Each structure stands twice: as structure tokens, then as C-alpha cells.
Image (spheres, rainbow, N blue to C red):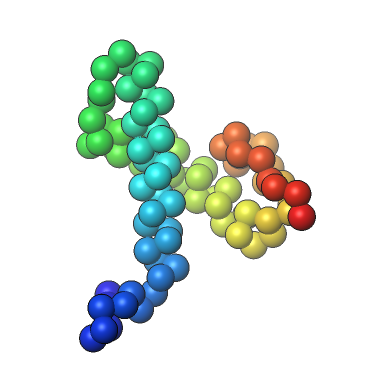
Length: 84
């Protein structure tokens, strides 16, 4: 949503959208490399939502609530916590 000046009312929501979109595009690239051809955004989106979104969200929320405490191994996506 925007206000009358065109500014986003909730920039956090937009940042979440951008972060999720970046992960989907990364997934698209990885899966396309594995397949040897471009799998397309729709297929990458469907696969990422079905197989990776929940883990990504749990990891992201854990990192936002305590960025210096590593998430349990079952929730990690290979990203490392930057030093505090």
C-alpha cells in the first residue's frame, strides 16, 4: 500500500517480498543449472514454495530475532551468521 505521496506505508513488507524473490531467483538459477536449461520462474516458484519456503522463513525469523545465535542445523540454508 502507498500513501498519497507514493511512499510505501510498510517498507518492511516490501523488504520481505524482495528477500523472498531473491531466494526464488537463486533457486531458479540452481535448478536450471542442474537441469541444463532454464526451468522458468513459475516452476522455480512452485518448487521453492513447496520445498524450501518454510525452512527459509524459520531461518530468517531466527536470524532477525537474534542475529548472533545460529539457527539449528535443520533450519539453516547454508548462510553463515556474520560476526557481531
